[in-house]
Image 1 (cartoon, rainbow, N blue to C red):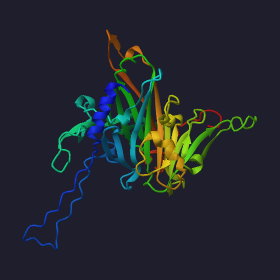
Image 2 (tube, rainbow, N blue to C red):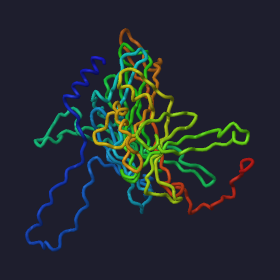
Image 3 (cartoon, rainbow, N blue to C red):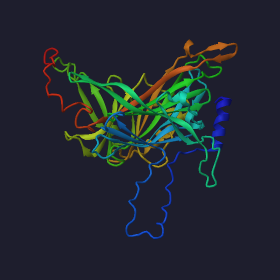
Image 4 (spheres, helix red, strand yellow):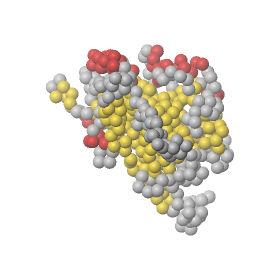
Amino acid sequence: MSYQRLVLGLAACASGLVLWAGALAQPVPLPPEGTNPARPATPRAPAAPANEVVQTFPSNDAMQTAWKVHWGARRGNGLYIEDAWFKRGPNDDWMQVLGDARLAEAFVPYHSGTPRFWDVSYNFPLCVVSREDAGPYGKLLYAPDQHGRGKNKDNSPAVLKPYVVQEIRDRGIAWKSAAGVRRGQTLVLWGTLEAANYRYIIEFGFQDDGAVTFRVGSTGHNYGSREWDGHMHNGLWRIDVNVDGPDHNSVLLMEHKEPLSLDSKEQTKARTEHTPFNGGKEGWADWDPNKFTMIRVINERRKGIRGEPVGYDLMPLRMGNSRHFGAKDEECTQHDFWVTRNRMGEMDYRQVPKYVTRGESIMDTDVVLWYSTPAHHEPRSEDGEMKGSQFTGCTPVMWAGFDLKPRNVFDRTPFFPYDTVKSAPGNIKKRGPGG
């Protein structure tokens, strides 16, 4: 570990973790003298937590869908999600999608063998953000000072600083057909972990169609004395998926198989297999590009309009697979997907191989997904330049991540103008044999 990272990490440990909590409830005053206690005033709705964001879509028209998100900010993990709920229509109830979701670790091993950094474990703080970070339409969100400065007598934080940016972004074409075209929107929350010479942009996106995006972007200053050494940035995530609540969730492994056999009658056929992940027990699986490997979390009790379980698919966005064989801690990088039951205190990605040895059921229960998003950084001139013995410049952001896509949450295509479009538009043309 570099001297700089060691000093910063020890300082962070000394100051402790700072958690972002919601506003405290205020005491209810007694009614004024002379009023009739039998006819109390209409009670007010409880105040929303200070860390709650509610966003309706479209942002500039009548609500069709919405997200409600509780976020947190802490040293080490940076920005994380406490809970998130989705509303698929104005008259629908909120449906929980996420519990605790966070970047659990960031492992950075260099090709030369050293250094090998575990950047979350050093308890680095979040960077303070500014109007330049937020852009013309972004909003700054405040959390307790990450350095622990400024306390009230009751030990509550007296100093709040802007650590998170809230944005509404145009996410491009959501769908396009003979019926027209629709551009989508997403609510984005992001913050940046100040990891010595590096900066990790941690970003969560909540789309108008119910999807959730998870991204980590590596930028900053190439490591001193290793400016031109290749290395990996392994974003290691812990995701408590709670489809319609934490209970009755099951995990499936999805794999595309093609061809079915080499027989001339079967070699053009394919299928998708859905099987209980690791036989329905805690364990691991690897991503295979030939199989389009994905993970599905379903609610065993809630069905969609076609009678199939409501769920969410973890869809990888990978450049490749990372495998590291240094200390015992690195065993967690030797597989891409891990699944455990949700147990109190199990938050350390490096300990996942130990967690799964219990072999408990991951069917019809509360589950946690652990997933790696590796990125390979091969330094280039665009990262900066050497001026004498000093490296000057900034590495452009390199992104890694994944998506959670809703499955059977909607009864039909969201935002499609069914009321104004015929079921079979006359201008749709067939495209070859079979249509």
